[in-house]
Length: 227
Image (cartoon, rainbow, N blue to C red; front, side):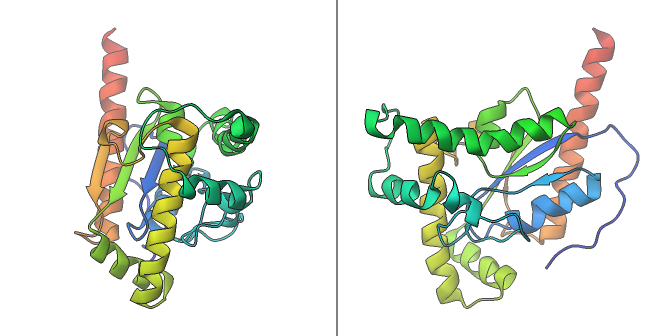
């Protein structure tokens, strides 16, 4: 299901895109393809669909080893999912240092990418970290049943396995953002573009994001030129 690479037509340069995606929404396909199309570095998420941290390896829908390993993420995620805060709360003193280390681990890659001139970031609460004024932020989602079907197709597993991965990944990734940033990653206010990526081919999703990001870049360049 990985789309073929092709050149982006001439137009305003897009230097920074973040992609937040629930399980089965295709973030593992769309984000690397965007980086390839734009010839930008790619930074993947810190978690896999099984609720484990992700390793620096081919991108998957499931939770990554990095997501599980950070500080160590597997223990923190277990804590997050047992007591996920529903809204703004204060971290207990016993976990404050762990939270700082985990947040620093996830953000270090983002800042390295920025220092190098930009890239495409999947996950890591990047839209929250960067804010609306830096980069173009996209959220991919869709109805659970369609995400299960798409996740199964992307990962080459059964729908029963995909349903288990959906539960683990959605719960852990939501807990990660809520715990560390007191924010719901599904909040549309965080993003410039929200797409039901189960309602159309992922190739079309990629084209929509490229067109929208380039339009934003053109608008910003025009505003700068007029000022």
